[in-house]
Length: 125
Image 1 (tube, rainbow, N blue to C red):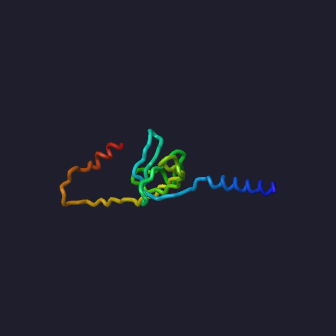
Image 2 (cartoon, rainbow, N blue to C red):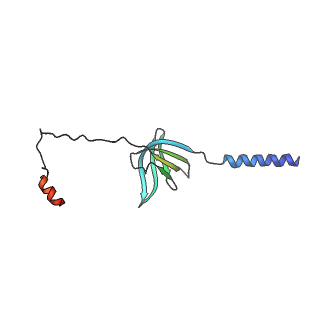
Image 3 (cartoon, rainbow, N blue to C red):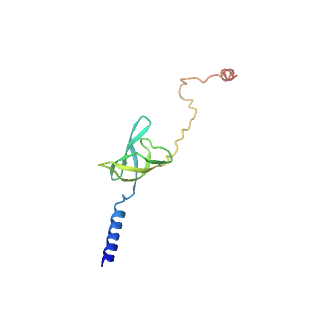
């Protein structure tokens, strides 16, 4: 009888210890605000489909660089204190490049003129 109660207690304790671990969650959204102090990132707000979430950035790892305002991110997080969530990994999603097609417009007046080629060559020598 004593042996079975010891085994029962061991099983109960193992369930309690394993169920207390925080569950890892992830979300995808747009960074609306980044709070920092000098060179240390403190927190960020991310707008998701469910609303705005505030993440604590202490001990966070970054993939694909550091996020800035208006960047799309995927955040892996766990519950933090109060209303703040603790970010563990922040992945910045790449933005498509913006190309500017510069064409010479001869219909408008030239406001600034380029330097003559001779003056550029003389400065480089």
